[in-house]
Length: 208
Image 1 (cartoon, rainbow, N blue to C red):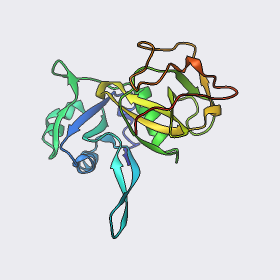
Image 2 (tube, rainbow, N blue to C red):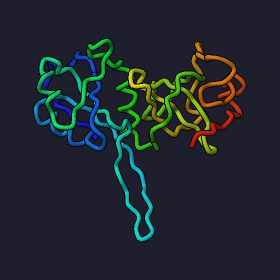
Image 3 (cartoon, rainbow, N blue to C red):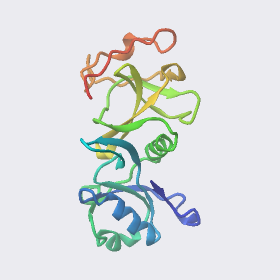
């Protein structure tokens, strides 16, 4: 779910921020802020829940308890008084901006029709760039999970990540790699030991 007002040209260069909400109040908060003219971004993903007598298809928040908004800090009191809102995510008591590139990468992922889902925050690993398709130009960390490849995108400020299923042959390695040590935070070996061109042999993550 993405809500925005394209007519608000003055917000074109405004920073993005994150609102921390009550559990399961993300959609309500997003709709309320949008009705008051605030540009919001509430990314969701499809999930299936199976019960004994039925199967239900749901749209769940990619970032539980968070809603993104662009600018709007001049209405900070109004935002904080919105039912379901706890706070604006910040540092040392001040709202902290989220990188535009992170928001745009997440936005492309949720509108790509590719499989996307939440993923444990991952900072270290082999960074790649998507060469073609709906995610072209997006950079992230490539991992292998259950026989398929996932591109990990993160909101660093929130310490949260999402995973998008991609074709390993549709990405290229970036020259600068960030590794905290011989293992990444998922316990997998450094991807320097595999090649993106030719036979991809990325070790599988144990998560999920």
